[in-house]
Image 1: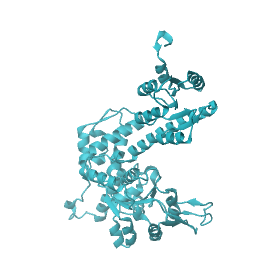
Image 2: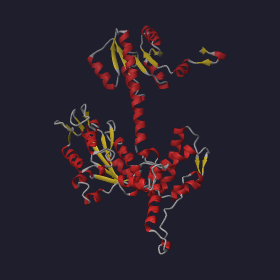
Image 3: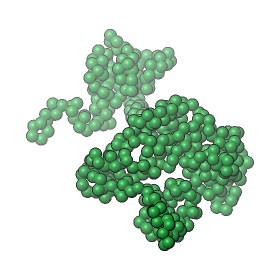
Image 4: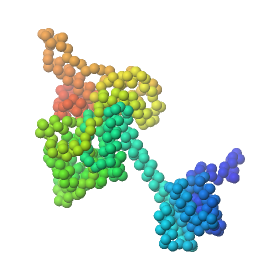
Length: 482
């Protein structure tokens, strides 16, 4: 036993846990070998345990976890191969290094087939064995870290991130699990803020492509020439500013997944090039001549009705059918009332953790108000409301008074009782109503002009005109987004 201050007794095993020292088990029927390796690896910073027989080794392996095992093949009663088999059955992740004076190619092949991490023949070089042990432990550590990170990614981007128990969401989740295992093109539709990208990421991280990149491109955020460059890449000198060759996102994604977000926004010329790429499974950089194989899976999303845009001549019908192999619509939050309380609790926990605040409580009245609201901004709007409340309110219990006024307001209807009065002015009434709608949409979107235009069903230029007309440029809803 070891003694620390105040005569507190600490066993060797406890000391190893305190210092988080890597433990090694050395098994050999020669005590001189055990003594040598104990000295060597103790100096290297490892905690070493030894066993003169396989029976003793079995007991130690059952009781404890070792970072690595070094074992001689020739042992009394049981062999090192028996130990290797025992380890792979009981603790398959534990690396085993085999040592023998009777090394043959047959034994080496057999040991590796059974899962040995390495193989050394006596008389061995101590420095070589040090390197083998260090590499074996590091390899297993990296493997465990990789598994942990993959698990976190799956939880972050998988179906667990699609929170809710409504029938509509359960049907979407079930569909995602099925289509994630095939390579068909997917078209996801739905209003802004319903979680289209969350669904796309879930498809990717539940698919065999999960090890490859997930690339998301907002097609509505870039002008035509830049979007082409982002999608297909460009060669040096192909246009002003192209100072070097650049890979497009189709190349960067490799065998992963490409999400073409807001696909309805792309111009007719880009639609032609995209259609050709999907049909030929090849892309060509802007200004280039070399064709590059397209190996990624395509997912497209939009908040627009593409069939209506086809009728208006704004979207190619052949591209629509190329994208619309498998399609589904993300349900708006107003059709998922039973999910609102779960989502609110999730965002509340997330925001409190993010801001370092004690978890707050929502009163039943708050939940009722949220369930009664129509949520034009859907899940994104709900998250914004929760974040705002957590940021502003110091109280631990969130009441209805803490919620923004928009959750209780109803859209104003024109005062038809005044229609026949002499002083009634139609233009003024329409302007007042329009201003109210624009202000409400700006508040819901958090000042995001593109989302505001989407809520109102108008284009970006029309929204800018209304903002200028109603002198809303300096309003708190817009802030720095104008």
